[in-house]
Length: 111
Image 1 (cartoon, one colour):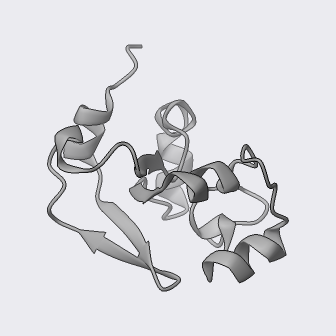
Image 2 (cartoon, helix red, strand yellow):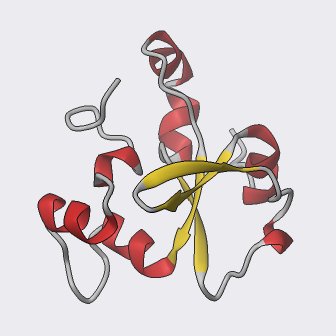
């Protein structure tokens, strides 16, 4: 199985951003050239390989793949890779949205 590129995924999945703690759908991103890579990352809600291997499991539960255009610091905090690691509660206080609304987790995500 060949790994898809972000350009291919942009064509397949809806893209959202976080504004004031809410996911807002974007319609203006058509390629990787349409956003600033120095300030934002495009992030898969469900890790790409996990989604591809288990499409039927996600479909049965009504969980859809989406891409999220988010600031780099937020992306690092989602994955606990930043200089300052945030607990789930601290993440929600800081960004006004649950980490589990931005990355799928069988235990914590709502589905």
